[in-house]
Image 1 (cartoon, each protein chain N blue to C red):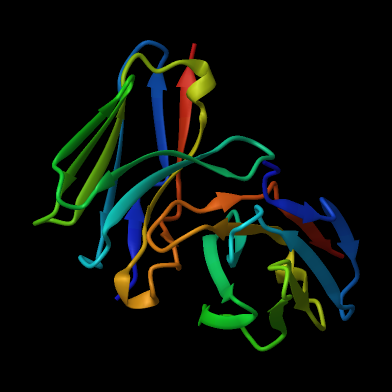
Image 2 (image 1 turned 45 degrees about the vertical axis):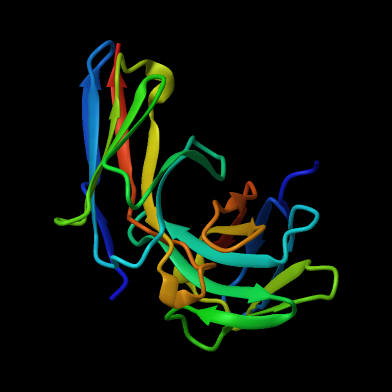
Length: 113
Length: 112
């Protein structure tokens, strides 16, 4: 089935680390993605991880993938007020032809100064 | 390279009317998808078009339809608008399988 689940809200203090979690159901996805949506804007790709990797680091971002549990997380180090946004976890199941992106509901990150 | 362009940015319609939204994908991208975003339901997949054919469809009523033209531009239409259709409608284009989707700014539709 196609389902991606995320918690809806996360609040952190500026300078702390943020961890956003996601679970997905379709193990056929080749890549898993994190998108960011700022107020009034469309979605922008933040980072992605290939399904045969456990971890990917990109500057302040760390993506961890537990394929056995179908669990994906995004860690933002040294969170800044500019990181306040909605973060979407997404997968592209192979059985949709590889073009249909399934999104979670999005986690709204609040960063307190 | 120009990004995904959606027009109009904002629309206000009354119940019962119909509306057409437009999306121009990034040049060279042949797949175009549409999503509805509401505070309560999150991001819901509407449909995906590739080479003028609808290949994937979400769970929306038949009032929601779309099409794609030979230049890959896409339109979506909503007929007999309901208050619950008020949402941000996002279009995304993709260059190839299993690659990231590039999103437009969206069209914010308000039904009154």
